[in-house]
Amino acid sequence: MKNRLTHIIFVLLMLAAGIAQAQQNIFTVTRTDDPSPFLYQQNPNDPAIIGTLQWAVRKANDATGTILINFNIPGNGPHIINLNYYLPDINNNNIVIDGSTQPGYQTGNPAIIIDGQTIISNCFIIHDQQCEIKGLYIRKFNTGISVLSPYFKIDNNVINQCNLGISISSNYGEVTGNIIGTDNTMTGLLYISGYGIFIGYTLNNITENIIAYCQYAGIMVTYINSQNLFSQNQIFNNPRAIVYKATPPVLKPIISSIINGNVSGTSQPNCRIEIFGSTGNENANEYLSFVTADASGNWTANVTTTYPYIVATAIDQNNNTSVLSAAFAVPAPTPGSTCAAAIEIQIN
Amino acid sequence: MKTKILFLVIAACFFRFGASSQTTPVRIIDFMVLPAYSVDTTQQGDTIMLNVLFKTDNAAQANKAMLFFGTANDASDVKLVQANFSIANDTTFITYSGTTKPVVSYATNIWVKLSQQQYDIFSHATLYVEDISGLQTERLYFQKY
Image (cartoon, rainbow over all chains, first blue to last red; front, side):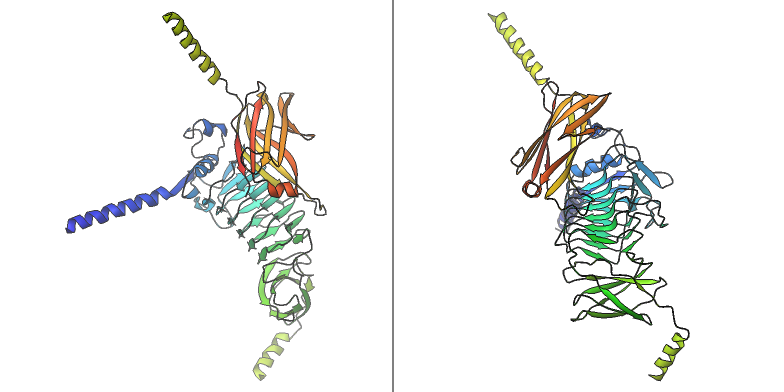
C-alpha cells in the first residue's frame, strides 16, 4: 500500500514537472549574424538561422506559455548584432527578451548591442500583451522600440542614435530605468534626433529613466487625456523636457522661494510635487525629493543639491504630470548660516 | 477504349499537376501596420499616417500589393489600397498615392493616410501581392490592438 502511494506521488510529481517544462519556453541567442528572413519560412530548423536573434523572435512568436529569449553569445563582449533586416513584430503574449542574461551584463552597460545600421526602421515592435524588453543596448534605428499593445515593460535598456527612442501607442506600460539619448558616460554624441519618448496613448508609467540629448524634446505626449505618470526621471540637455501637443493636463508648479534648503511654492491642490536639482530651465538633472501640496496648493520641502537651480513637476491624483516649472536659482549659502541653525537648535 | 481511358487519366493528372505548380515566386512575410507620428507638434489635422511594412522576396516579379483595412480579416470596408511595383536601374520600387519607395533588404514600405474615424474603426488589415503573371501570394493578416 505504501509502495503504491509512493508510486502515485512520484507519477504525479513527474507529470507536474512535465507540465511546468512544457509551459516554459527558452530560446537562446548564441550568435550575432542575421541571415535572410526567408530561411526560417523554408525551414525553421535551418542551421543557418538557429541561434540568431531573428530566429529566437520567430520561435517565440510560434510558442505557447511563458517565453524567454535569453542571450549566451560566446567570447568577450560587448557583442554587436548588426541587423540586416527588420525583426518580426513580437506578436505573442508573455515574451520576455532579457539582455541581462548575457554574461558580462551590468546595469547601464548592456553586453548585447543591437545595431540597426541606420537602415532598419524599428528594432522591436511589441504587438501582444505582457511583453518585456530589458537589458539591451539599442542603437541606430528609426525607432528603438514601438509599442502597439498593453501591459508592456521596457526596463534598463540603453537606446540612442535613433530618430525616436520609444514610441508608445498603448497603455498600462512601465518604462523604467532606461538611458535614452546617451549612455552611462552621459556623452552628448549619441543623441536622439527627435523625441526620447513619444506617447500617443494613456495610463503609462515612465519612471527613473535618464532622457538626454533629444533634439526635439525628452518626452512628447499627444494624447489629450494623458494620465501618464512621469516620476523621478532625469531629463536634461533637451530643448524641452516634457511637451504636450494639447494643453498640459495639470498646471506646472511655481517655486516661490528657497530659504535654508526649504523650497516653497504653489500648485494645484493635493498634487505630488517632485523636486529636482537643475542646470536651468527645462533641465531636471537630479531627483531630490517629493512633497504633497495641501488643499490650498501650498507646499514646502527641504532639499540639498549641488546644482545651481531647482525645478519641480506636479502630479495630480490621476497621474497627470505637468511640464517642468521655471528654474529657481538656489541662493548662495550665507556665511555662518550653519552655525546659526545649530545655535537655533541648541536654544530650542 | 482502355487506352483511351488511360490517356484521359494521364492527361487529367498532368493537368492537375500543371495547375498546382502555378504558384507565384513572390513571397511575403512580416506584415505590420504602425502609426507614424508627426514630429510637427503644431499639426492638428484629423488624419493618421500609417507605415505599412512587409518583406517581399522576388520583388522584381511583383506587380501590385493589395491592402485591405477593415473590421475583419479579408474585409476592406474601411479602405482598400493598391500599391504598384516597378523596376528602374535594377532596383524595385513600390508606389502608392504619389509616394515611391525602394524595396531594400526585402523591406517594402507603403505610407497610408487614414482619417481619425477610419483609424478608430479599422481593426484588421489584410495584405497580398499579385505577381506579373497575375498569381497571388498567400494573405497575411494584421490585427490592431
